[in-house]
Image 1 (cartoon, rainbow, N blue to C red):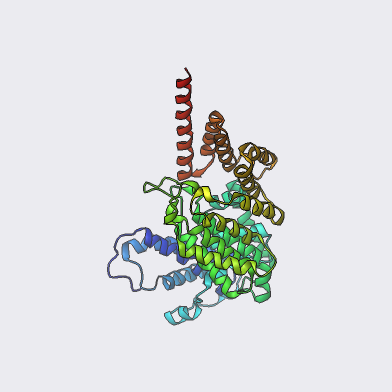
Image 2: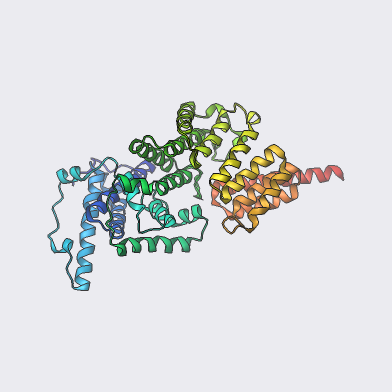
Length: 428
Protein backbone atom coordinates (compact mmCIF):
# COMPACT_ATOMS: atom_id res chain seq x y z
CA UNK A 1 0.00 0.00 0.00
CA UNK A 2 1.50 3.33 -1.07
CA UNK A 3 1.34 6.09 1.51
CA UNK A 4 2.48 9.70 1.58
CA UNK A 5 6.22 10.12 1.96
CA UNK A 6 5.94 11.41 5.51
CA UNK A 7 3.29 10.86 8.06
CA UNK A 8 3.11 14.51 9.08
CA UNK A 9 0.84 15.96 11.75
CA UNK A 10 -2.66 14.55 12.15
CA UNK A 11 -4.63 17.79 12.08
CA UNK A 12 -8.25 18.85 11.78
CA UNK A 13 -8.00 18.90 7.98
CA UNK A 14 -6.91 15.23 7.97
CA UNK A 15 -9.82 14.30 10.21
CA UNK A 16 -12.24 16.22 8.01
CA UNK A 17 -10.91 14.34 4.97
CA UNK A 18 -11.52 11.00 6.65
CA UNK A 19 -14.99 11.89 7.89
CA UNK A 20 -15.92 13.30 4.49
CA UNK A 21 -14.90 10.05 2.79
CA UNK A 22 -16.92 7.84 5.16
CA UNK A 23 -20.36 8.30 3.51
CA UNK A 24 -18.84 7.90 0.04
CA UNK A 25 -17.24 4.61 1.04
CA UNK A 26 -20.44 3.45 2.74
CA UNK A 27 -22.31 4.16 -0.50
CA UNK A 28 -19.93 1.90 -2.42
CA UNK A 29 -20.01 -0.95 0.13
CA UNK A 30 -23.78 -0.83 0.61
CA UNK A 31 -24.33 -0.76 -3.15
CA UNK A 32 -21.88 -3.61 -3.75
CA UNK A 33 -23.08 -5.98 -1.03
CA UNK A 34 -26.67 -4.74 -0.50
CA UNK A 35 -26.60 -5.14 3.26
CA UNK A 36 -26.65 -1.75 4.92
CA UNK A 37 -26.20 -2.76 8.58
CA UNK A 38 -23.15 -4.94 7.90
CA UNK A 39 -21.77 -2.38 5.45
CA UNK A 40 -21.98 0.37 8.05
CA UNK A 41 -20.18 -1.77 10.61
CA UNK A 42 -17.47 -2.58 8.05
CA UNK A 43 -16.96 1.09 7.20
CA UNK A 44 -16.76 2.00 10.89
CA UNK A 45 -14.00 -0.61 11.31
CA UNK A 46 -12.18 0.79 8.27
CA UNK A 47 -12.45 4.29 9.74
CA UNK A 48 -11.01 3.07 13.04
CA UNK A 49 -8.13 1.41 11.19
CA UNK A 50 -7.45 4.67 9.36
CA UNK A 51 -7.50 6.68 12.59
CA UNK A 52 -4.91 4.26 13.99
CA UNK A 53 -2.66 3.88 10.93
CA UNK A 54 -2.75 7.13 8.96
CA UNK A 55 -1.25 9.40 11.65
CA UNK A 56 1.63 6.94 11.95
CA UNK A 57 2.13 5.84 8.32
CA UNK A 58 0.80 8.85 6.40
CA UNK A 59 -2.36 9.32 4.37
CA UNK A 60 -2.50 6.90 1.38
CA UNK A 61 -2.20 8.32 -2.12
CA UNK A 62 -5.76 7.09 -2.74
CA UNK A 63 -7.42 7.34 0.68
CA UNK A 64 -10.87 6.54 -0.67
CA UNK A 65 -9.64 3.38 -2.37
CA UNK A 66 -7.79 2.37 0.82
CA UNK A 67 -10.99 2.66 2.85
CA UNK A 68 -13.01 0.74 0.25
CA UNK A 69 -10.49 -2.13 0.26
CA UNK A 70 -10.38 -2.34 4.06
CA UNK A 71 -14.15 -2.06 4.42
CA UNK A 72 -14.70 -4.72 1.76
CA UNK A 73 -12.37 -7.10 3.60
CA UNK A 74 -14.10 -6.37 6.92
CA UNK A 75 -17.48 -7.03 5.29
CA UNK A 76 -16.52 -10.42 3.88
CA UNK A 77 -14.78 -11.36 7.14
CA UNK A 78 -17.94 -10.58 9.08
CA UNK A 79 -20.15 -12.59 6.72
CA UNK A 80 -17.79 -15.55 6.88
CA UNK A 81 -17.72 -15.36 10.66
CA UNK A 82 -21.51 -15.37 10.73
CA UNK A 83 -21.57 -18.28 8.31
CA UNK A 84 -19.23 -20.31 10.51
CA UNK A 85 -21.21 -19.50 13.63
CA UNK A 86 -24.53 -20.43 12.08
CA UNK A 87 -23.05 -23.27 10.03
CA UNK A 88 -24.69 -22.17 6.86
CA UNK A 89 -23.46 -20.75 3.64
CA UNK A 90 -24.35 -17.56 1.86
CA UNK A 91 -23.56 -16.61 -1.67
CA UNK A 92 -21.03 -13.99 -0.63
CA UNK A 93 -19.22 -16.12 1.91
CA UNK A 94 -19.05 -19.13 -0.41
CA UNK A 95 -16.83 -17.24 -2.79
CA UNK A 96 -13.17 -16.53 -2.32
CA UNK A 97 -12.50 -12.94 -1.27
CA UNK A 98 -12.13 -10.97 -4.47
CA UNK A 99 -8.84 -9.31 -5.19
CA UNK A 100 -9.84 -5.66 -5.30
CA UNK A 101 -7.38 -3.71 -7.40
CA UNK A 102 -7.17 -0.06 -8.39
CA UNK A 103 -9.04 -0.60 -11.68
CA UNK A 104 -11.99 -2.25 -9.92
CA UNK A 105 -12.15 0.47 -7.30
CA UNK A 106 -12.17 3.18 -9.95
CA UNK A 107 -14.90 1.32 -11.87
CA UNK A 108 -16.97 1.04 -8.69
CA UNK A 109 -16.70 4.73 -7.88
CA UNK A 110 -19.54 7.08 -8.60
CA UNK A 111 -18.90 10.81 -8.18
CA UNK A 112 -22.25 11.09 -6.42
CA UNK A 113 -22.00 8.04 -4.14
CA UNK A 114 -22.98 10.15 -1.15
CA UNK A 115 -26.11 11.44 -2.87
CA UNK A 116 -27.00 7.91 -3.99
CA UNK A 117 -26.49 6.68 -0.43
CA UNK A 118 -28.79 9.44 0.79
CA UNK A 119 -31.61 8.26 -1.46
CA UNK A 120 -30.88 4.62 -0.59
CA UNK A 121 -31.26 5.34 3.13
CA UNK A 122 -34.76 6.75 2.58
CA UNK A 123 -35.87 3.13 2.21
CA UNK A 124 -39.56 2.14 1.66
CA UNK A 125 -39.35 -0.26 4.61
CA UNK A 126 -38.85 2.69 6.99
CA UNK A 127 -41.06 5.38 8.40
CA UNK A 128 -40.07 8.89 7.41
CA UNK A 129 -38.59 9.67 10.84
CA UNK A 130 -36.56 6.44 10.90
CA UNK A 131 -35.26 6.99 7.37
CA UNK A 132 -34.18 10.51 8.26
CA UNK A 133 -32.46 9.37 11.45
CA UNK A 134 -30.59 6.59 9.65
CA UNK A 135 -29.49 8.94 6.89
CA UNK A 136 -28.23 11.57 9.30
CA UNK A 137 -26.07 8.85 10.84
CA UNK A 138 -24.80 7.36 7.57
CA UNK A 139 -24.53 10.43 5.34
CA UNK A 140 -24.25 13.32 7.76
CA UNK A 141 -21.88 11.59 10.15
CA UNK A 142 -23.90 12.89 13.10
CA UNK A 143 -23.72 11.16 16.45
CA UNK A 144 -26.80 9.59 17.99
CA UNK A 145 -26.91 12.42 20.52
CA UNK A 146 -26.86 15.08 17.77
CA UNK A 147 -29.66 13.31 15.89
CA UNK A 148 -31.67 13.02 19.11
CA UNK A 149 -31.30 16.78 19.60
CA UNK A 150 -32.54 17.43 16.06
CA UNK A 151 -35.64 15.30 16.73
CA UNK A 152 -36.08 16.60 20.30
CA UNK A 153 -36.10 13.08 21.80
CA UNK A 154 -33.85 11.33 24.38
CA UNK A 155 -30.61 9.83 23.06
CA UNK A 156 -31.66 6.30 24.13
CA UNK A 157 -34.88 6.64 22.13
CA UNK A 158 -32.96 7.64 19.04
CA UNK A 159 -30.46 4.79 19.44
CA UNK A 160 -33.36 2.33 19.48
CA UNK A 161 -34.94 3.99 16.47
CA UNK A 162 -31.74 3.70 14.40
CA UNK A 163 -31.26 0.09 15.45
CA UNK A 164 -34.84 -0.78 14.50
CA UNK A 165 -34.40 1.00 11.16
CA UNK A 166 -31.46 -1.25 10.25
CA UNK A 167 -33.40 -4.32 11.33
CA UNK A 168 -36.44 -3.28 9.28
CA UNK A 169 -34.31 -2.98 6.15
CA UNK A 170 -32.78 -6.39 6.80
CA UNK A 171 -36.16 -8.09 7.28
CA UNK A 172 -38.07 -6.28 4.53
CA UNK A 173 -36.54 -8.18 1.64
CA UNK A 174 -36.50 -4.94 -0.37
CA UNK A 175 -33.01 -4.64 -1.90
CA UNK A 176 -30.78 -1.86 -0.65
CA UNK A 177 -29.86 -0.33 -4.00
CA UNK A 178 -29.78 2.98 -5.81
CA UNK A 179 -33.40 4.05 -6.48
CA UNK A 180 -34.81 4.58 -9.96
CA UNK A 181 -36.26 7.97 -11.02
CA UNK A 182 -39.76 7.15 -9.71
CA UNK A 183 -38.36 6.02 -6.34
CA UNK A 184 -36.25 9.18 -6.15
CA UNK A 185 -39.43 11.24 -6.49
CA UNK A 186 -41.17 9.20 -3.78
CA UNK A 187 -38.27 9.63 -1.35
CA UNK A 188 -37.57 13.26 -2.18
CA UNK A 189 -39.36 14.82 0.82
CA UNK A 190 -37.36 12.71 3.28
CA UNK A 191 -34.12 13.46 1.42
CA UNK A 192 -34.70 17.21 1.54
CA UNK A 193 -35.49 17.03 5.25
CA UNK A 194 -32.22 15.19 5.84
CA UNK A 195 -30.23 17.75 3.88
CA UNK A 196 -31.91 20.53 5.84
CA UNK A 197 -31.03 18.89 9.17
CA UNK A 198 -27.42 18.23 8.12
CA UNK A 199 -27.05 21.88 7.16
CA UNK A 200 -28.70 23.02 10.39
CA UNK A 201 -26.32 20.94 12.50
CA UNK A 202 -23.39 22.34 10.55
CA UNK A 203 -24.54 25.94 10.84
CA UNK A 204 -25.44 25.72 14.54
CA UNK A 205 -23.95 22.60 16.13
CA UNK A 206 -26.13 21.27 18.93
CA UNK A 207 -23.29 19.64 20.88
CA UNK A 208 -19.73 20.50 21.82
CA UNK A 209 -17.31 23.40 21.80
CA UNK A 210 -17.87 24.67 18.24
CA UNK A 211 -20.79 26.81 17.17
CA UNK A 212 -20.37 25.84 13.53
CA UNK A 213 -19.26 22.65 11.76
CA UNK A 214 -18.44 24.11 8.38
CA UNK A 215 -17.69 20.71 6.83
CA UNK A 216 -21.30 19.57 7.44
CA UNK A 217 -22.80 22.81 6.14
CA UNK A 218 -20.61 22.72 3.03
CA UNK A 219 -21.46 19.06 2.35
CA UNK A 220 -25.19 19.76 2.73
CA UNK A 221 -24.92 22.59 0.20
CA UNK A 222 -22.93 20.40 -2.20
CA UNK A 223 -25.43 17.55 -1.97
CA UNK A 224 -28.36 19.89 -2.43
CA UNK A 225 -26.73 21.26 -5.58
CA UNK A 226 -26.40 17.67 -6.81
CA UNK A 227 -30.04 16.93 -5.97
CA UNK A 228 -31.06 20.00 -7.93
CA UNK A 229 -29.01 18.78 -10.90
CA UNK A 230 -31.02 15.53 -10.77
CA UNK A 231 -34.36 17.37 -10.54
CA UNK A 232 -33.71 20.85 -11.99
CA UNK A 233 -37.38 21.83 -12.30
CA UNK A 234 -38.26 21.10 -8.68
CA UNK A 235 -39.08 24.36 -6.86
CA UNK A 236 -38.63 22.98 -3.34
CA UNK A 237 -35.09 21.76 -4.02
CA UNK A 238 -34.28 25.22 -5.38
CA UNK A 239 -35.94 26.72 -2.30
CA UNK A 240 -33.86 24.57 0.03
CA UNK A 241 -30.62 25.50 -1.74
CA UNK A 242 -31.64 29.17 -1.59
CA UNK A 243 -32.34 28.86 2.15
CA UNK A 244 -28.92 27.29 2.76
CA UNK A 245 -27.06 29.95 0.77
CA UNK A 246 -28.95 32.88 2.30
CA UNK A 247 -28.25 31.51 5.77
CA UNK A 248 -24.67 30.39 5.16
CA UNK A 249 -23.86 33.88 3.88
CA UNK A 250 -23.83 35.15 7.48
CA UNK A 251 -21.37 32.63 8.90
CA UNK A 252 -18.34 34.97 9.04
CA UNK A 253 -20.22 37.44 11.25
CA UNK A 254 -21.71 34.95 13.70
CA UNK A 255 -18.82 34.80 16.17
CA UNK A 256 -16.23 37.10 17.69
CA UNK A 257 -12.52 36.31 17.37
CA UNK A 258 -12.73 34.51 20.74
CA UNK A 259 -15.59 32.32 19.54
CA UNK A 260 -18.36 34.19 21.38
CA UNK A 261 -21.74 34.21 19.60
CA UNK A 262 -22.87 37.45 17.92
CA UNK A 263 -26.70 37.58 17.63
CA UNK A 264 -28.23 38.50 14.27
CA UNK A 265 -29.15 42.05 15.27
CA UNK A 266 -25.56 42.78 16.40
CA UNK A 267 -23.68 41.26 13.44
CA UNK A 268 -21.36 43.25 11.19
CA UNK A 269 -23.31 42.90 7.97
CA UNK A 270 -20.37 43.97 5.84
CA UNK A 271 -18.97 40.50 6.58
CA UNK A 272 -21.95 38.77 5.00
CA UNK A 273 -21.12 36.95 1.76
CA UNK A 274 -22.81 38.98 -0.98
CA UNK A 275 -22.19 36.32 -3.64
CA UNK A 276 -24.16 33.70 -1.71
CA UNK A 277 -26.92 36.22 -1.01
CA UNK A 278 -27.20 37.09 -4.70
CA UNK A 279 -27.26 33.43 -5.76
CA UNK A 280 -29.78 32.51 -3.06
CA UNK A 281 -32.04 35.43 -3.96
CA UNK A 282 -32.05 34.48 -7.65
CA UNK A 283 -32.77 30.82 -6.84
CA UNK A 284 -35.67 31.92 -4.65
CA UNK A 285 -37.05 34.15 -7.40
CA UNK A 286 -36.99 31.24 -9.86
CA UNK A 287 -38.56 28.85 -7.34
CA UNK A 288 -41.40 31.23 -6.45
CA UNK A 289 -42.15 31.80 -10.14
CA UNK A 290 -43.07 28.12 -10.57
CA UNK A 291 -46.35 28.22 -8.69
CA UNK A 292 -46.96 26.31 -5.46
CA UNK A 293 -45.04 27.65 -2.47
CA UNK A 294 -43.55 25.12 -0.07
CA UNK A 295 -41.82 24.91 3.29
CA UNK A 296 -38.27 25.65 2.14
CA UNK A 297 -39.24 28.47 -0.20
CA UNK A 298 -41.03 30.26 2.64
CA UNK A 299 -38.07 29.83 4.98
CA UNK A 300 -35.77 31.09 2.23
CA UNK A 301 -38.02 34.11 1.75
CA UNK A 302 -37.73 34.92 5.48
CA UNK A 303 -33.94 34.58 5.28
CA UNK A 304 -33.91 36.87 2.24
CA UNK A 305 -35.82 39.60 4.10
CA UNK A 306 -33.18 39.51 6.86
CA UNK A 307 -30.35 39.57 4.31
CA UNK A 308 -31.83 42.52 2.41
CA UNK A 309 -31.69 44.78 5.49
CA UNK A 310 -28.51 46.88 5.57
CA UNK A 311 -29.02 47.38 9.33
CA UNK A 312 -30.94 45.36 11.89
CA UNK A 313 -33.35 48.26 12.44
CA UNK A 314 -34.17 48.24 8.70
CA UNK A 315 -35.55 44.67 8.89
CA UNK A 316 -39.08 44.43 7.47
CA UNK A 317 -40.63 42.60 10.43
CA UNK A 318 -44.25 42.95 9.21
CA UNK A 319 -43.26 41.06 6.05
CA UNK A 320 -41.47 38.40 8.13
CA UNK A 321 -44.56 38.05 10.33
CA UNK A 322 -46.77 37.58 7.26
CA UNK A 323 -44.41 34.90 5.94
CA UNK A 324 -44.43 33.05 9.29
CA UNK A 325 -48.21 33.12 9.34
CA UNK A 326 -48.23 31.51 5.90
CA UNK A 327 -45.56 29.03 7.01
CA UNK A 328 -47.73 28.00 9.98
CA UNK A 329 -50.48 27.05 7.52
CA UNK A 330 -48.14 25.22 5.13
CA UNK A 331 -46.03 23.38 7.72
CA UNK A 332 -47.16 23.83 11.33
CA UNK A 333 -44.75 22.81 14.08
CA UNK A 334 -43.33 23.94 17.42
CA UNK A 335 -40.23 25.64 15.98
CA UNK A 336 -42.37 27.57 13.49
CA UNK A 337 -44.62 28.67 16.36
CA UNK A 338 -41.55 29.73 18.36
CA UNK A 339 -40.18 31.88 15.54
CA UNK A 340 -43.67 33.21 14.79
CA UNK A 341 -43.82 34.45 18.41
CA UNK A 342 -40.56 36.36 17.92
CA UNK A 343 -41.96 38.02 14.79
CA UNK A 344 -45.14 38.94 16.68
CA UNK A 345 -43.01 40.49 19.45
CA UNK A 346 -41.04 42.55 16.94
CA UNK A 347 -44.23 43.87 15.30
CA UNK A 348 -46.76 44.04 18.15
CA UNK A 349 -44.55 44.09 21.24
CA UNK A 350 -42.97 41.49 23.58
CA UNK A 351 -46.12 41.01 25.68
CA UNK A 352 -47.96 39.68 22.62
CA UNK A 353 -45.02 37.43 21.82
CA UNK A 354 -45.06 35.96 25.34
CA UNK A 355 -48.78 35.25 25.00
CA UNK A 356 -48.06 33.32 21.80
CA UNK A 357 -45.45 31.19 23.59
CA UNK A 358 -48.01 29.86 26.08
CA UNK A 359 -49.31 27.43 23.46
CA UNK A 360 -45.92 25.69 23.46
CA UNK A 361 -45.99 24.88 27.18
CA UNK A 362 -48.33 21.96 26.47
CA UNK A 363 -46.42 20.77 23.38
CA UNK A 364 -44.24 17.88 24.55
CA UNK A 365 -41.87 18.38 21.62
CA UNK A 366 -40.76 21.78 22.90
CA UNK A 367 -41.99 22.10 26.47
CA UNK A 368 -38.89 22.36 28.64
CA UNK A 369 -36.61 22.81 25.60
CA UNK A 370 -33.87 25.38 26.10
CA UNK A 371 -34.87 27.37 23.01
CA UNK A 372 -38.26 28.12 24.53
CA UNK A 373 -36.58 29.48 27.67
CA UNK A 374 -34.09 31.48 25.58
CA UNK A 375 -36.86 33.19 23.62
CA UNK A 376 -38.83 33.89 26.81
CA UNK A 377 -35.71 35.42 28.36
CA UNK A 378 -35.23 37.71 25.35
CA UNK A 379 -38.87 38.86 25.41
CA UNK A 380 -38.83 39.49 29.16
CA UNK A 381 -35.66 41.52 28.61
CA UNK A 382 -37.46 43.56 25.95
CA UNK A 383 -40.21 44.21 28.52
CA UNK A 384 -37.65 45.35 31.08
CA UNK A 385 -38.47 42.46 33.43
CA UNK A 386 -34.83 41.64 34.09
CA UNK A 387 -35.35 39.24 37.00
CA UNK A 388 -37.54 36.93 34.92
CA UNK A 389 -35.21 37.29 31.96
CA UNK A 390 -32.20 36.23 34.07
CA UNK A 391 -34.11 33.19 35.35
CA UNK A 392 -34.97 32.01 31.84
CA UNK A 393 -31.50 32.74 30.43
CA UNK A 394 -30.00 30.55 33.16
CA UNK A 395 -32.55 27.78 32.62
CA UNK A 396 -31.83 27.85 28.90
CA UNK A 397 -28.06 27.71 29.52
CA UNK A 398 -28.51 24.64 31.70
CA UNK A 399 -30.53 22.94 28.99
CA UNK A 400 -28.23 23.31 25.97
CA UNK A 401 -25.39 20.93 25.09
CA UNK A 402 -23.70 23.54 22.88
CA UNK A 403 -20.89 25.21 24.82
CA UNK A 404 -20.91 28.45 22.75
CA UNK A 405 -24.67 28.80 23.26
CA UNK A 406 -24.30 28.02 26.95
CA UNK A 407 -21.61 30.70 27.28
CA UNK A 408 -23.72 33.24 25.39
CA UNK A 409 -26.82 32.61 27.52
CA UNK A 410 -24.88 32.81 30.78
CA UNK A 411 -23.27 36.06 29.59
CA UNK A 412 -26.72 37.54 28.91
CA UNK A 413 -27.88 36.49 32.38
CA UNK A 414 -24.81 38.05 34.03
CA UNK A 415 -25.22 41.26 32.03
CA UNK A 416 -28.83 41.67 33.09
CA UNK A 417 -28.07 40.75 36.69
CA UNK A 418 -25.47 43.51 36.79
CA UNK A 419 -27.92 45.96 35.26
CA UNK A 420 -30.61 44.98 37.79
CA UNK A 421 -28.23 45.51 40.73
CA UNK A 422 -27.15 48.90 39.44
CA UNK A 423 -30.77 49.95 39.10
CA UNK A 424 -31.48 48.82 42.65
CA UNK A 425 -28.47 50.69 44.06
CA UNK A 426 -29.52 53.86 42.25
CA UNK A 427 -33.04 53.60 43.70
CA UNK A 428 -31.61 53.17 47.19
